[in-house]
Length: 73
Image (cartoon, rainbow, N blue to C red):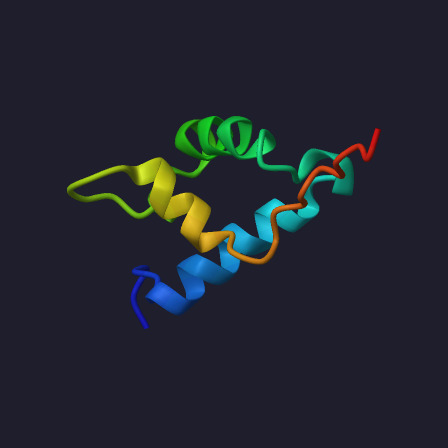
């Protein structure tokens, strides 16, 4: 097997890195910080191509981004 990751492996790694963050650092706002960290440390795990790489990362994290609670006041 070569050094090239399959899409399933790449997605799994991205999601694992995200889940290593504390729960408080897995909010919608934190995706920007995570994207920057991934660009610097593991750009090979980000999907690149035409369009918005950041939005592709958000899609990779579907179901894992914590929604900040809203105030009922």
